Image (cartoon, rainbow, N blue to C red; front, side):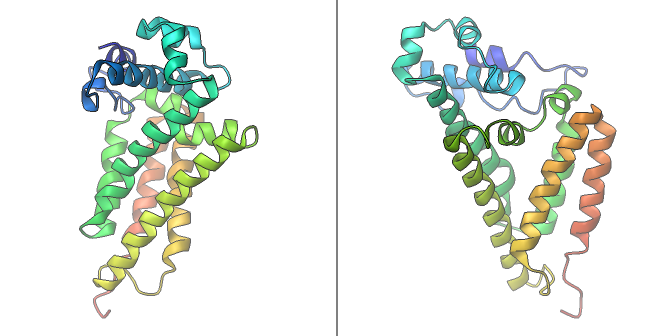
Length: 229
């Protein structure tokens, strides 16, 4: 479908699927009208991720989807409304799926280490060059538009809260050291993950990403409860 065609074009590196290729209409569409809306959201995500929100082109989104301008404005009354929907319905859902839901069971240190390793292996060079869509929008739009800032802040707050809750459960289960401040640790881990992606983006280097990730993993290993606890 059109949404899959737009996002799927970044699958280089010897056939390795691009990490940010998460969305296709088949994932959530239930009716033709909803399919059109999801195609628009997928194309808008691709456009915003590649060019930023302020430089994103409605004309390019329409060209990629084959949807008319009138149909786009039927679903999204403005470009800003479309950007908000990309954040609320796509980026937020992906962050939950990747970083929060897996932590709801198991040893949180094991889950975090596994996720970091998996993400590092899946990232293509182009993924790294484009950067984290959440961080990109935070840097571009937080000081420009309060609606974006509030949504971005809510996503980061949810991420931190999910991680803190998992670490607290780990403490109760004897898996995580009892002497750590779980809220402060969650702030640091989220900031480090985003910083790793930012450093790799600037260097355009998968090696930098993996070095930063392995250093974070080393820190996470030190969160494990000691045997005497």
